Image (cartoon, rainbow, N blue to C red; front, side):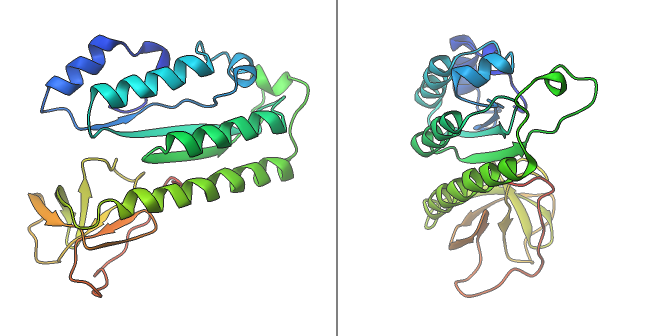
Length: 216
């Protein structure tokens, strides 16, 4: 399930996903921020406490779920305290997949007319801070897969995708080039590199490399 709005989730939806084996244990839920100050300015319909409780309910109700989210830094009026709160939330929540975008002042939008626009330099610093934090978390998530057997879909020779990997956005699973394309295969994870998992003999390099279109 991709691009779901946090305000539209319900306990019924969580229960339905948990009980249906045909639904991938992967959800994309763009949260944009966690600070009540920023959520209000963004008109996001939810509070920080609501978001924290929702993520807890989703993880408790759907064991093994992988949660992807995205945040925006540099939205007009964002303070250092807002960024600190967001960084703490990311560190505590440890999302399996996470992207960060820099706010872009688009002509004709409500936000473009707001005061307290953030400088390009400051937006860049905030983006690098959060992405550095998430890269460390992502390494821990990938490390937790080593030694496990997971089901993947082989999409091209040597390149596969797991249940928690959206096409062209998330990482990939590199597999032996001999595995049949278009088939589901159970593979053992032997290592990882950045956001990608390896299901190859230890020391063997992937036969090909792919790069996600969207930053992790």
